[in-house]
Structure formats: C-alpha cells, structure tokens
Length: 151
Image (cartoon, rainbow, N blue to C red):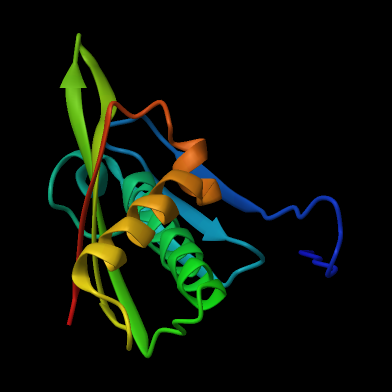
C-alpha cells in the first residue's frame, strides 16, 4: 500500500512486473502502484511496434509528469500560476555497443501562462528540467533535450 504523509522525510512508490517465457516469445504484465495502471508488455511492444506498453513509455510518462509539476511550482512561486501546461516526453532506446541503451529523452512543453515572456518561460522550463526528481534520476542519459514555448 502506498502511503504519503505531508512533511514525511521519505515517500515510497511502487511498481511491479511479471514475465513468463523467454525474451523474444514471452510476455509479461507491468503494474503501477497498487493497480492504478496495469498493462501487458513484450519484446514486440518494447523493441518493435507491438501492442502493449514498455518500460520506456512508463519512464516518458513519469518524466513528463514530474517535469510539468516542477515547472508549475517554479512559475507559481514567481507569481505566475499557469493556466495550463502540457508536456510530451520521448525516450529513445538505441543499440549502443551491442546493448539496448536509453540514449536520449526529449521534453516538449507548452504553457498558457499570463505575465511571462517566451524567454522567461524557457528559463523556468530549463530550471524544471534540471531540478525535477525524475530528471535527476535519469542524469546518466547522455542527452535530455527541451523545447519550451508559450501557447
């Protein structure tokens, strides 16, 4: 069970996966939290265009969510509560030196924010990219790109 207390020193979140069979013909299920999301995954959904999810999609969603909340927080603290923020994240899985590797993440964010110029929005977005917990956890990825624009 997930528990969060305001002011708690540590928050723990969970996820799980089950796999049956070999890598290429087997399949599995990924569960986020205590069943908030559950979906199938397979070799085809990860390395081809097959049905189901994969760890990279889940990382993309986590990064987009974390980044967007961090950007909202930075803007709000500066007195510019956003009307809306929308972020898409794309995770690139490449074969590097014979191993599947997370090589790049691109964040694309668009905001409706009153009283902020485009260059200021980009500065806040860059700060959010550097400071959100998921960005920091993914710091080993060689490239994290960012495109930020006002709507």
